[in-house]
Length: 117
Length: 116
Picture (cartoon, rainbow over the protein chains, first blue to last red):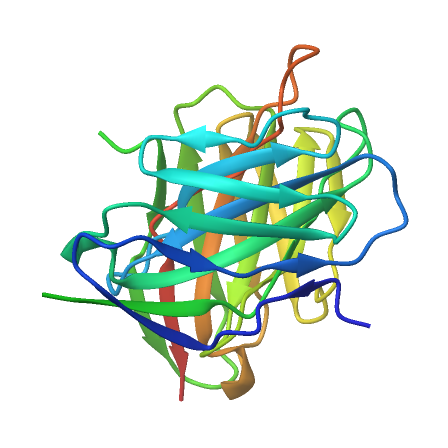
C-alpha cells in the first residue's frame, strides 16, 4: 500500500490566489513527521514546511501553511497569494518513527503546480 | 555558498564504467543520505549514514556503494554503471541534535547522471 498519496498530478492557479495541494498518508506509527518540498524546473529540492504528529497547531512558514487533519491522515499544503515563482513540482514526504530513531523519508509522486499570470 | 554541494552536476558515461558522485556539506550535520529520482517520481533512498562509522543500505542499494570519508563528505559509487541507473541523484543531510530537532533533510542541488 502506498504510504504517501498525492492525487493531483497537475494543478493550475491564478496568480495571487490561494491553492491547496493534497497529501494523504498511511502509517500505524503514533510518532511521525510530515514534510513538503518544492522542486522547481532547475531540479533542486527545497524544504518548505514540517509538521510533527504531536504538534497541536498547524505549521506555518510565510505563505505556506499545512492543513493537518490527523484523523483523516491528511497533510495538505496551502500556498497563499500565489506567485509565478511558485510554479514547480511539490512533494509530500513522511518520516515514520520517533525523532530519536527515524531516518527515511517516504515521498509521494508529486503535484506539478502552474501559476498563471 | 551552498550548504550542501554535489559534484559533478551533470555526467554522461558509458555502460560498465565506474562512476563516483561526491557530496560535501558545511551544515555540521551528522546524518547524510543518497537518493535517486526517476522521471515523474519521488525520491528513493539508496544509502544513509548517521556518522563516519555508520553506513546503512536504503531501499535500492543494489549496484551502488558509498564511502563516508569525513563528517562533511559522503560519496556514492556506481561500480559498473548500467542504463537503468540514469537518474537525478540527490545528497541530503540532517541534524538529530537536540530534543526539539525535527531531523529535517536538506538537499544538495542534484547530479544528473546519464548512462549510455
